[in-house]
Length: 451
Image (cartoon, rainbow, N blue to C red; front, side):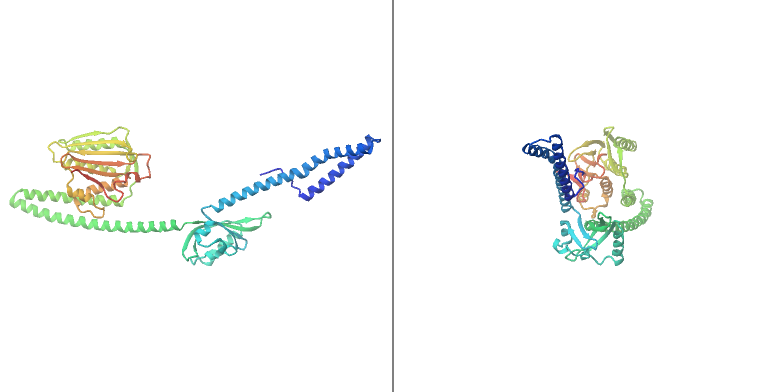
């Protein structure tokens, strides 16, 4: 900030003032004797003193007092700026180290003490090599010195050692400080402690590797199981044909064929679930009214004896996995195909809700017998303990809804049927999945069984 202060030194200003005052005095005396040659000494002294004061005061003001006041103001401003910088550095979240040109530490802020465990008095006057670990070779430090001594900024990820011997990782930036002649006088280092971040990255890599191994094992297990199921089904089909030829189409033979069909569907369902778990699940925004109406119309055509109704606002949209239609198909199929009522009815509705958070809610209500108690118990188990393979389709539904950032709830009553409630994020909620996971936060589906 330019305060208008003089660029002259105080000594020069004083000499200039003396010369100016002396010159003014000579001029005054000459003028008095020239214009008033007969003036008496008393009057001459009074006039001389008065004029001298009137001249000297402005001279002193502009040559001494004003520059001095401006200099004091400038010093106060500089002091305030320095204090502000000091406070900022003292309270900075990153470590700040200032060394001389040889690398001797002149200043550290409190963050250095917190991160390294060394007190300020223990490091002032020493070299930053007190934090040196065995993770970097000498060439690393030689390259660092070559960079900063050339006037450039050095940036690197460095492993250092605390006072207690533990290693920590920092993102290090070292820059030279130049004096008025353009020569390097000091270095300033700014260090960001990224130890927790690096540990988290390592944990994520381990988790990804573990997940990859798990997917590979599940894939192998799934192929083996499907192969064994198909082989067993082939054997059972052959014996069922023999029994049918010998005894005709009895009730037992029909039950065998129904079970064969169920096992075949189960095999295909397992393959579908493997794909669900192995593939990436992009999220998209979808017009729900169009999707729900298409699926309900398809079910009406396939099941003319069932009564399907739908109530969905035409502008209702939600965010969901690209695989969501498979989950919807599973829920609608269960509501119709497992409904043994004389007049099966299914009602599909969609709406927005704000309880407990903004969401889009889909309800599928049927008048069937409800979900069997043993399957509800299975749905209450942890995902890793699928006790009943008959609930596999519901688990696939749960996984797809979960990948969509939503939640799945079942309310079953043998007298009135089953209500399946699916909650999905609204289009404005792209990343925050927590509001919809209250029912499944521990890896479980929410189930309710009326008394």
